[in-house]
Amino acid sequence: MRTDLVSEPGDPNRPNEDFAGVGLPACGQGGCVILLDGVTPPRECAGCVHTVPWFVGRLGGALTELTVSRRDLTLPEVLAEAIARTARAHAGTCDLSHPRTPQATVVLSRWSDAAVEYLVLSDSVLLLRSPGGAVTPVLDDRLARLPRAALATDALVDTNLRNKEGGFFTAAADPSVSARAVAGTLPRAEVGALAALSDGAARWTERFGEGDWTALFGVLAEEGAHGLVGRVRALEAADREARAFLGRAKTHDDATAVFVEL
Image (cartoon, rainbow, N blue to C red; front, side, top):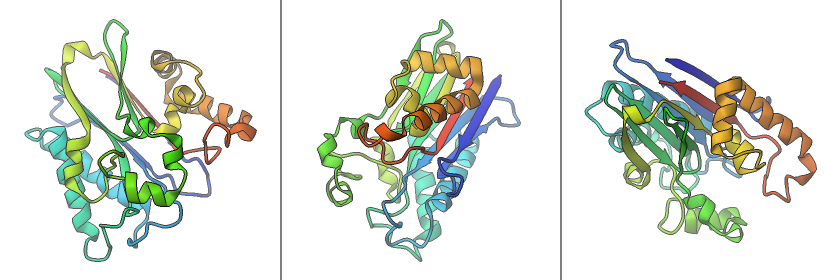
């Protein structure tokens, strides 16, 4: 088995709000990938005394433990329990009902000798490659399907769209959001490799159009996660003037890529 992971902040003067991990249990039976992309608030995490990195660290730690140790739980059940555990850690000090309470996108995958399970919530990406080379993206495209005008103001996103029917969903403080995730299971024989990407790493395809998901997977396999993130950074640096036109609020975003060859 080959694994490769890179997580790079978009700004060296700000903490990285992504989380990623690969779990390979001591029993040697399968493994898992966890990736979170913390949602940067427009100002502060209103109602909460904690930061986004605090939240993703807590949630990521809980997901890592539960995904590895509780194989009796499905991935949606793992996510629900991890959200509940994280919420309990700051319910006494924070207003978790506020729409800007800390939150994150989620990618989970867990495999055994028999199956590969997967879960995606919000706009991070999971890619599954068959032994024959076909790449299948697993996407939660609710946010991408919203009209750009609907995202024009922070207030509108908060009141009408975030974690609401007709909008999009993220992992925050409500465990029931796990039922909104895109989740499923494939036979292990149908998956030869997989990759998890925060939207900062997925920009190579989604924003810059340098190649489709199959081409991106090829970059990961040939150049590694560091090669993909380096390509994204070069494209961002060369395109500073056009970022507003293309809808990028910041030149660089936190970029995380995980590659696993089963």
